[in-house]
Image (cartoon, rainbow, N blue to C red; front, side, top):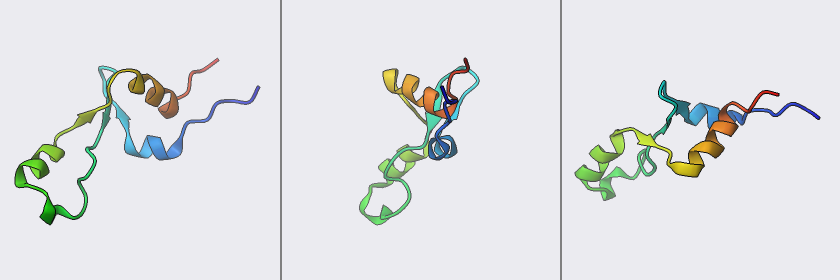
Length: 67
């Protein structure tokens, strides 16, 4: 059985915190800001955490389980 490889694109965009949470940036943040409210722009600066079962899947992509 070949080794499981981590997903390079996911590793560049998502980090694991010391407490084990999965941290990422908000969507709709980088361009076309003129259409968005100032409140939405400020809200998107904050850290976004991946929720629930998605977190388990993303952790697997970042660093696959060792055998």
